[in-house]
Length: 429
Image 1: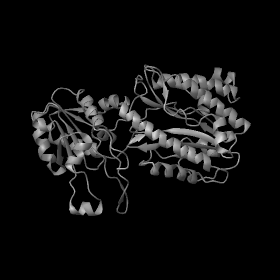
Image 2: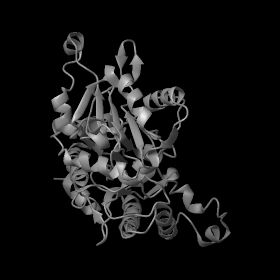
Image 3: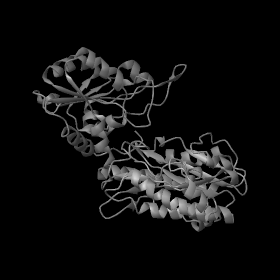
Image 4: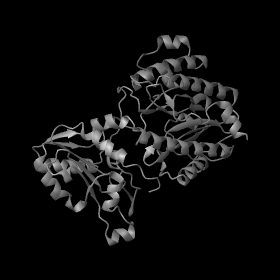
């Protein structure tokens, strides 16, 4: 692996927290992600299921985690099933985990090869009453794909139809939103790498540079720093492309007098960072660009203060939209009469600020959690207001990652250049 070993106490504590939420006499089963077919004889690069990683730290395909805290057999209360290396696998793919290595990473003492899974599960199912199965319940996730958790969960239900089946996702959602200090440290590390990449690209960008060349500077810093790569497909959008919220082509040229919006983040040890900065390609903001930039920055600074325990994404966003509405008035983009006559279901600000203010951050860049979930100390969310003026070719978004604490919000990206004069100064050194 590229990242430094993670203290197994994180995974041990995560499992303790999870099983404490189960009904009596319950067993939970988690599967690794599929190895996804790409083309020809190639698969996409494997990426572990976030829930399985959260509970075990195991970063390998064809892995199964079984948790049965009340099992009459003590050795069967936590079991990892792993793919066993053979000579062919060793030659073509390299060594897989040994059982001692898996125990060292996860803290799980009972590690078996995958060929024992069926026999052991039959024995465990006789003793268990409630079975917890895992699925992806992210609200905006939709797919026709029958991934491993679904396929193997259905098989279990067909083989043992009279057990009581339950969802693991609500428990995982509650646990994963509040970060252990070790998790916060890993996200801080990913943010540090993201900062290095941003400072590198500030020195590189100039008129005539291609968007993908700026992206290359970013990924260079990520890989040399031990990341697996981007936490999400990066948005490197110059000129009018910055008004396309999920622009990912990154093939345009950066022109003199244009802005370059860069939304990117490093992924380190599976933990994500997420940052957006908008910079002037020529090293100086025009008067209008700076006016809009400073409006977005004011909204951001006011929004950060709202990241406090007890608030929610929905309530925070409503308040930010009110702040944004006033800034849009000040920029001459809206007028008071429009606002008085607006349809409450389609407010005027949506033309210039069409997206949300925040999302949870963690093992996924859009991490588990709901918009109605009350903020708690230990949660990490983004803060990302933006203004997009298509008719002027101006798109500006600013984004930092915020830690919720009892003492108030902590900006984990404090120190990464954000003020317009700092951006200009660094670009013109």
